Image (cartoon, rainbow, N blue to C red; front, top):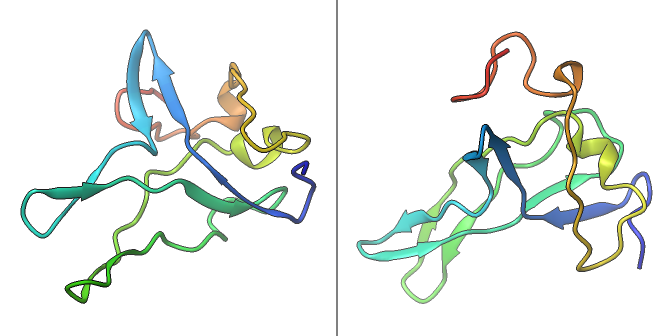
Length: 110
């Protein structure tokens, strides 16, 4: 299947600035002591940033529930995934106006 505008997708992403991974969906969240989990980022292709739902981490065996906000991708993510196929990969250079805005994100300047 191909990701089309309006379809819901799950992606892992890494934002690299000057050879350093600054933001990544692969960052594991600590659950109940020494267990961790990293979930893909879920959003609707072509939607406006901020309209996605938060990721939910759940360990049903122990009933553990933790709803933590996921790392946010740059605005470009909502557009560049259109046309991708399941399992596909893309390397994209994001222009400043489609990045993290005037505030920046972590080590990535505005």
